[in-house]
Structure formats: C-alpha cells, structure tokens
Amino acid sequence: MAVGPIHAGVIESGHFRFHVVGDRILHLDARLFYKHRGLERAAEGSTLDDGARYVGRACAACAVANRLAYAHACEESLGLEPPSELARARTLLLELERIWSHLNDVAAVCAGVGLTAGNTLFAALTERARRLNADLTGHRFLFDTVAVGGSSLELDARETRAAREELEAIGRDAARGWRELQFSASFQDRLPDIGVVDAADVERLGTVGPAARTTGVALDARSTSPRLDYPGFECRLPDRPVGDVRARLEQRALELEQSLEIALRLLDGPVIPAAATPGGGEAAVGVGRVESARGATLCVVERDGNRLRRVRLRTGSYANWPSVAYAATDNLLPDFPLINKSFELCYACADR
Amino acid sequence: MLTLLRDLRRLRHSVGLPRPDRGRSLAIRHVDAGSCNGCEHELTLVSSPYHDLQRFGLGIVASPRHADLLLVTGPVTTRMREPLLAAYHAMPEPRLVAALGDCALGCGILGSPDELVGPVDTVLPVDLRIPGCPPTPETIATALLGLVDRAPRGSGIGAQ
Image (tube, rainbow over all chains, first blue to last red; front, top):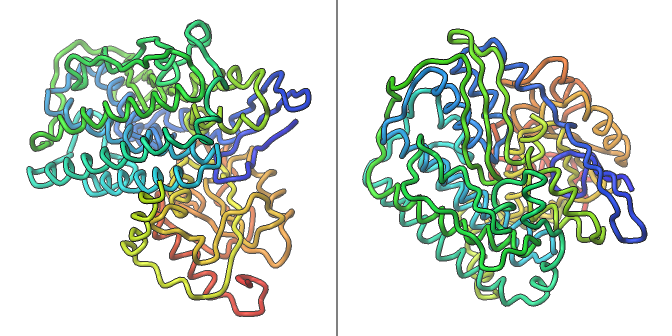
C-alpha cells in the first residue's frame, strides 16, 4: 500500500510503502528525501559564518539545535571556547526551542487520535510559546539567533521578568491541560501497547532523544555538554520504561517540565551579548553535539582557512526514522499516524 | 476540558482579523514541495484558537479533488515537481494556486541548483503570493481572506 509523498493533512512530504495483511503492518518501507535540497553541498566553499544559514534552514523546528551543533563544530575547529555568558544565552535558546516543540508534539498526538479538544489546547500553548520567542529574539522560530563565535542576544531585567511570567503561565496551563488528557478515557485507550521500541531495540537501532529515554536508557547530550550551561544535568526517566506511544507522550510532558525549569533558571538575570574566546588548539575538523527536541544532533565541519570544505549534519530525526519503521511493524495500519506522531520526526531534518 | 476550552474562545479577539460574517468559503489543499517545515508549522497554527480560520469558511481538505486552492510551500525540489503537478491536475476547475513563504516565491533560496526546479511560478500559474520566512499565522490568514474577498461572486471561487 503506497502512501504519499503528499499526505492528507498539513504534513511534510515523504513516501511510505506499507506491506500489509488486512489491517496488520508486516513491514514499512519509509522512502524519504523527496525534500532533498542539497544544503550541505551548497554550503561547501562558503565562509564559516555563511554556512550557518544553510544549516539553520535545514529545518525550522530544530533551527537552534542545528545551528548550535554547527557553531560548536566550527568553534572546536577554530580553537574557541564559549564564556559562561555565551553558554547561558545559547542554552536558553535551545530550551525555548524544546518548549515550543514539545507543546507542539503533545498537540500532534492529540490530532493523531482525533481528540480535537486536546489538540486545540496545546496548539494555543504552542502559539503562546512562539509569540514569546518573537518577543525575546524577534523571530517565532528563533531563526538566525545562533552565530559562530558569539551571541548578540540581549535581554534586560524587565524582559527576562516578563518572559519568566509567561513561561510560568504556559507551564501552569500545560499542566492543567495535561491533567485533562489523563482523564480522557477514549484518548488514553488508544495509546498503550502500540508502536513499541524497547531498550534492546534502542541499542540496536541507535535511537536517540525522548524515544530512547522513554525505554529507561539514560542517553542525553545535555548531560555531557561542556560548551553549554547544564550544571549537574540529569535526564528524567519514566517510572515505567515501556517504550510505547503512551510512554513517548508522557516522556514529552516530563521533559517539558524540566525544560521550563531550566529556562526559568537561565532567565533569573539579564542576558548579555558575548563572544567566544581562544582557548584550545586549532584543527581542520570540528565536531558539535547538541540535544535537540528529537535527540542528539551531530554536526561535523571540515574547513580550509575560513571556508567550509565539507559539512555534515546528522540530526535526531535522521537517526530515529529507522525506529519509526521498526515500531510500525506488527501494528494496525490505522494506528500508524499515531505511532508516527509519537516520534514527531522532521522530514526536512533528514532530507536536508 | 470544556472549562479550559471555553477560556480559549476569547483568544480570537487578540488577533486583528475581521468578523466572520461573509458567507463564503474556500477549500485548501496544502503541498510541501521541499520547505524547511516552518511554513507547515505556521499553517497548522492558522487553525489554532487564535486565528481559527474555519469560522471564516476556510479549511484544509484531504484531497486535491475537493480543493479550490493549492497552497504550495518550499522551493520545489526536483523530486516534488511531479507530485505537485499531479495534485494540481487532480483539482477541479476553476482552481487557484498560492505560493506560501519566501522559498516558494524564489526569494533567498538555499540549496544546490541541480536539486531544485525553481520557485512555484516556474511550475504552476501563481494567483496569490504570501511572503515571509516563514509568514506568521496572521499573515497567512489575512492573505487567504483577502483572496476570497477579491474573487468576484459567481466566479466559482469562494462560493459557499
């Protein structure tokens, strides 16, 4: 059964080929790369600063994570270290992106079940989070806020206070909405025991991000991020490491709470512009690793002076697509949209 | 849940859209021809309680056969050219095409030239251009409502 590349809703383009017997999926062949724009090749030969534009436009939902992985890779290669002010500004941007992304993912699972009320609630919260992004940085998706070698983000005490109040309000309303979802029996009935990816599968398939942590695997790039501001970070793991659709949804709620706490801590004082300082040896190759909302995003940069020779971006979405295909096996075809939404991967991030 | 939803109704007053008393409609089919996902995320929120485009009679439909308007995002990759044309030819006439976002309009496109066909107007006749990277839900809503208002009554576009 062939589905796509154009889907029924407002969804990115990609082709799925289901092998089915009746309603049961035997095998899913995900044929992506309909959106391949050749960004990495187009970036070759540009300056390190210009290269960030290509990486940033790979995906809007992971714009900060991708640019940050790129900036870290360039800075490692140039022998630059971020001072604490720079680390703080970048960590804040990364967590703001995760907050709107997780709110959007909860809304998407509600839409996958057909629970319009839940979808509406969390869509409104997503809109609020994006408006907050625009208030703080001038862009709803935080485009172009991360640059190689420094940050120009400046927030005075009044702005950080307003942002804290809005984040606290978003957190409160998200918690109220989440509680309502717990008591929606028809919604909860759809979620358990489908699309299972357990800890052994995570190991075998190289699954990353919330989808991996929900099986009890403590895998989070934030716990080993010396270039960012995560002192004593410990990833939150679920009480029941099951790895089904419900677990992945609950992991989002768990991590949303944590991201709000981190963002509130970072907004405790003014944010000032900062530049990276020389602190290490130069190298032709640099590697950056950042935890996006979908998992560990890796960027490798090979440079020739101040020009890019080659750049490679491996996003969390790219790493997790095989897990979606694996999770779909042995489930019912009508459950696939739900399984897909529980991962909520970007096609643009994988296709580049 | 109902209490929470009731609170959301006041949100629509926070955006500057006109009153929904027009008695016309538009069925929209969206096609992603290689966007970065930003236009899709904003288009999704056009249905959020803030803008709630359904109250103006505008809605996203599942098939191009039900659509008046083809809403295209992205710089049109070589791989999406054929599916895009197939969707357009599946639409009943009269039909309109809107290019959503700077990539679809051919502004500041990034990518390898041999992977891209070019802006939407090199593939299809474009009736509505919505600029922005990505355009905000408010910009998208205003542009779509303007299109319905401009279409003459009896033209088959925007009919109820």
